[in-house]
Length: 276
Image (cartoon, rainbow, N blue to C red; front, side):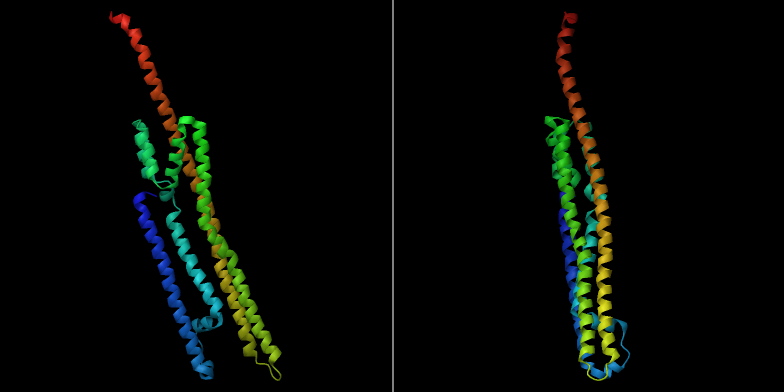
């Protein structure tokens, strides 16, 4: 990512987070109004046909609202990762072209400065390799390997929240399942005379609905965690190969320049007797 692109990326993250908060507030207000309407209607409204959305909101309750907020956060995170973890951000073609042009001109200092000014992983790898190139190509490659491991760790930390959501979703759904089953069995335990099937079915439906919502959050979270983990592995390997190729070109070009400079003084005394 270039230095000029950092404010845009930060602005994009802020917009996504503000959008998530706004949607969560709207949905919370809607769920609260639905609950108030259901409570105010009493038995008269209970006798009427209830819409599917109203039934989901009533059965989900606070736990379902929490799962909904996590789902919105999950969606915002996935969108952000799609924007940031891509080839144009990890290994910009402009940086590769500029470095190759400067290396061809044997302007190694400017190539190093260009890599340092670029905040992308490729720029970090090139600057790390070129900084250690004075100690040999092997030292430069070791420095790039260490930098590559650090970059991979940082990128994987950004997708770790998806694994957390994938694990947390079924646990929250299980909490709702237990709540619904407790409500159903409490109706059975407290019914001295005739048990009302509707009350028992209400608790069971709540339990199954919350279980479904938790699993619905978990499945895509686990999928996208594996998806981005594979993408990070592919991008980091490809970026490391590009950086190694550029640093190797710098190494051979610098050796060629030193060999030419050393051969020029040796040729001058040999040509002197011919001139005399």
